[in-house]
Length: 362
Length: 195
Image 1 (tube, each protein chain N blue to C red):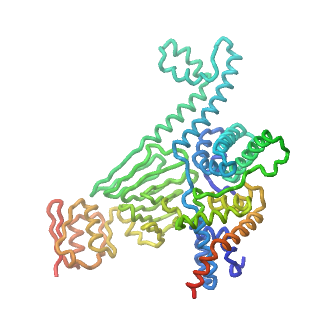
Image 2 (cartoon, each protein chain N blue to C red):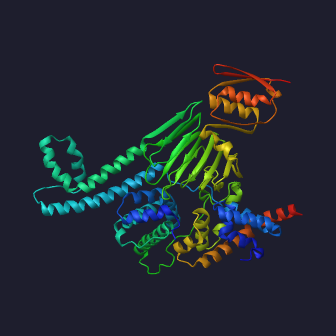
Image 3 (cartoon, rainbow over the protein chains, first blue to last red):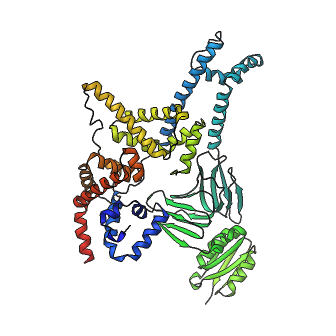
């Protein structure tokens, strides 16, 4: 295809170009991103086409409320149940003419079984066996619905970390001061968790059942992979991928979504998502007990120390502490870390119980 | 090739008599189908009844079901057929007429369709809607399926029983008249800027 001869309308109607403008496919995005860069003489056509497409681009598609959908689901299930039961009642009346069962009553009888006394239960057992298959399906489905409703919440305080295994076999390492909510048992068509703070996920692969992490408006969807989500502040979410493929999107704007591969990260802030490479030690170190400072300023150091060691940090003459901090500390005590970072820096410090005081000096 | 692994699994589950397959379909596609049904029929009740019948038939006829390569376009197409059937029956009753060429009412856009970019002013939205309204019914449906429902050309071709190339051509004509009538002002402005 000779894209160099494309008119504005050609660009607009090209499906791969649409995917580029809407960020809906990474390969096509990469292709057009590169093409546009290499063909500056087409910039006018490209920009006009982009403008028109963005005007036509839909925001979020309207979705009916969840309870409405549940009602529809119930209604259809009832209709199908009724049809099945009618079929069975008819059959039974043929075989056991003396059992005068009215149509559609089968289910209510099944439900009464446990309320009957022992003698009645023996008699009732025949009915149960007769419609046993349907009863079993009912029970297991109810059980699943109830299990889904049981949400578990784990909160990790400062100074601690926690490793969890979820019902699908996925492993989550939660960093200090983080919270995660997940269902006791995942449903068969979605695996959703809600995160505040930071966690490293090793998601069990299941292509038909995507794993979704909600962090405020940012939604990270994955099919099976390892990656790190940092969302201490919901207005600033970072997702770093160590292996596999991940999709990050902003559910509010929905225009913004990116696909990440290994060693790529997304930074989401102010309704924008930026892609970049990242230093894996800096982002993944914590999960192996390694505290890492790379080009960190004093504020970043303070919040990392508070979180890691559960201390309160007080700073005197902070404006005097201007440099960047570097250092890697594998399972070290606060004393060792402070000795290390104060070595080349302009401050002194004291540690008393859970209080760390840092004093800037000239 | 299946457009979506989850949809492929649903087709298998459906074949195996798993009721949860219907739950999945309702959860994933009901809303989109419902609004498309309303667009076609101008009647929420018809839309709801048609989808309900369609899902029940899908379940009851599952053993005879051919492989579904694309669940979304399959459902859209099937719904459209049902809506046409219902409207045709109504018309026949009303007027006893055999001429059923224009069974579907005119395809209309409204502000609620959100078919319009976020930065638009109310005035521009109205203007864009009135320009869209001048397109042919088929063009309107293509614009709707493409930019509102997010279907690709293959899916639109399937739903509307058209060739993919026709979908492309019809959209291109629609875009041309849209740009001529709506974006011409902006274009002068950006040309000014470039100078």
